[in-house]
Amino acid sequence: MKSYGDILEFTEDRNADLMRAYRYQIRKARHIHAGKVAKALVNMPASRFWVSEKRARNVVGALIDGKDLPENMRPSKCEMFSEIYRRVLELRKARPEAPVLDLIREVIYSPAPKFYMLPRSAMHIIYKIKKGHHNDSLKNRYTFSR
Image (cartoon, rainbow, N blue to C red):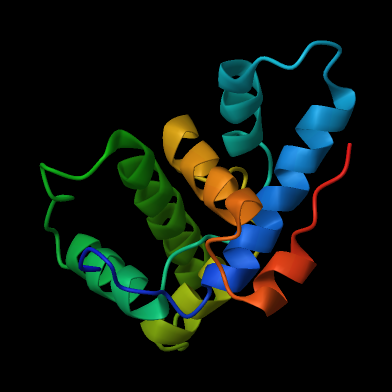
């Protein structure tokens, strides 16, 4: 499990994907209501499942071994891991000889139906990006305009 304050290897790409969805929602809104924008953007398709290979391997591996998802896991993350697990099992039927780790990788790097995060978490990330809480290369990548 990721510890508080850990920087994920895909943070920059995830943030860019989140900003893409945010800008789309802002452009299409007649009246901007932050709560509605946030809810809509986390339910937009994402370019991939935003989870590390290690975390996906641990959780999906446990599910394959017959264990349940952790009780303290957020519902959005439970939904995400359930979808990843479902897709891995589907691929496994088609390619039973393939290593499970390869199947997990294939799934997490494929497009996801949504971001699987809380709206408030998405907006927290967006506000940090817009306020410049990232290095200069990130700030240039996420410039905001309406």
